[in-house]
Length: 138
Length: 139
Image (tube, rainbow over all chains, first blue to last red; front, top):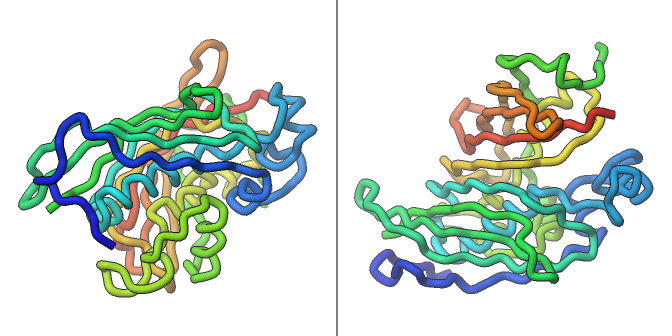
């Protein structure tokens, strides 16, 4: 699978977005199922003030990882970094769009570390997670 | 062994956790691929690293659940996550995470804990390192 080289990257470049629908079934596969658990127990989630079980925030890091692996390839799988802040809950049934914009590029050894501003938005256009991710490009 | 309920007051900065070992299997990788709807070919066949590799975030929950090795956790919310992917995770590895609580604080009346972690293979080589912040439910 072809990946990007640093010479083909420009600051401000937009990465191809990912769209992720998140049904309860995928949350169950990710987090497991048990009672009194905010990710799988609807009554418990309601008790905690949410209208549906929450997708684990960690799922959003997986989506950003997919975005970055498609962009930086092996230089994300080995040498990648990510720092995310989760600002709004993601509920079962939500659809997230995962976006990235290249923010900076710095030499690191013989390669270039490309830093991408990344975020996830729900179907209402609200940001649910924000941060940065980077990978090493040839 | 007792598993006391995790509370902000009981938690100690400097406290250390170690997970059990976990065998990375093709089935685990496939389950994860379904869960996050990411079926990249490197997870199922050859990759630039030779054979298949796992999703870089596959073992995030092993780290996130370190506190469950000692406590019953009433739940909480995940506030922040940092990862550094040092080496690829490969099927057949037996992996273990180690963590240390480096901070706890209260903000707007809610308690938080911060943990640094590494995830290692059976030789002790670091695969992933990072840090996460979790908000604790009070009840």
